[in-house]
Image: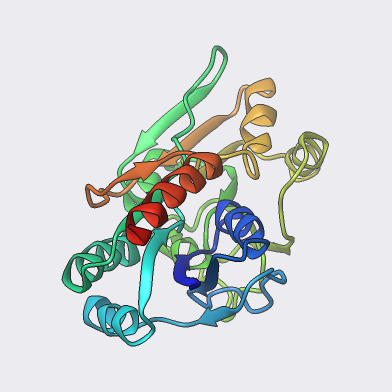
Length: 252
């Protein structure tokens, strides 16, 4: 009998996991997306879009759909859904695994400046005008309104509507992953003097940090949020091994 798995996704790892599981005959997979991206890439398994209505709503969904295993493969900064997943899984008695990317670690030549949040990043940029690349999500960029003196470059998958409130912005739409050549051209064309981004981990958006290192640019990294302490792995392969073990225990 097929076991129904729910993946909380939105990352390259979630997609890779879904691709591997889609070929299996022992599981049925549903991939859940938050719905913040207007035109998400095609997925190899059925997709559910939108929130669940908090931890209680997710718990009800797990029960109603007889979910055997829950995999949290959301972005490292998606703290709310990860917290809801931990509460819902515990309440519904569903085993939970978090697939979490390790944070990036600075190398020789990097000028990384950790900041607690967007407000701290605004302060850290200083009063002098700069050309700043905001490599952040749509929800964060509006927080730079208190620092209107800078010229901002913003890149997002979807257009930002309404546009951010800062007076001098350039908005680009593009979907990663981005190559080193892409990022070098972006920084040079727009004469970027500083970058603000999240410590997302993974390879899809790391090239901008390599390009920044070569140009001795400061990078202001927003701190990762606290996430619930649940069983976790760092790779798709490790997640598949955990799934095989968990499924074998259910079959006994």
